[in-house]
Amino acid sequence: MTSNLVVTEEKKRKAGIATRYHAFYKRQENQGMLWFLISLISLPAVVMPISILAMSYLSGFVTFIGISMLMFFTNIILTIAEQPTKTKITFYLITVLFHLVVPLVVFLFGLFL
Image (tube, rainbow, N blue to C red; front, side):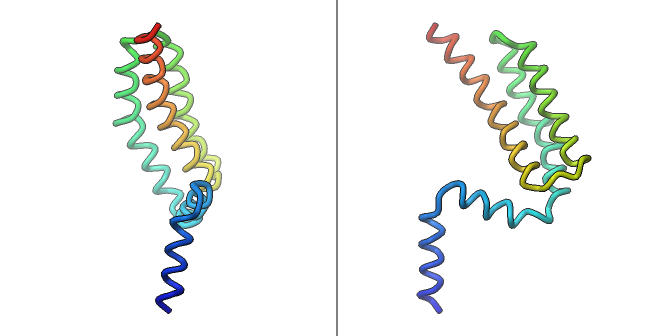
């Protein structure tokens, strides 16, 4: 019994990020409303204000605001359209990644160019 547990733990450590992500969203399939609330609260309360404030000092501010708002409303529409939880989680993570990476990349381009 314990050797089976050790093998399972070893497989988890060796599993790639795609395999771990697949296992994660499979566990979250019946938590669709929770992911809607996470995106509804965290995006406009934390993620968007910080990135918008950072972009207000950099170039491309208006374009960034437009894309940011489209991504926020797309997260809401995914729940209204009753999309699978995998889609909601994936697009939420893409939105957060966009709000973290774009200001950083624009800042670095402004710094080095």
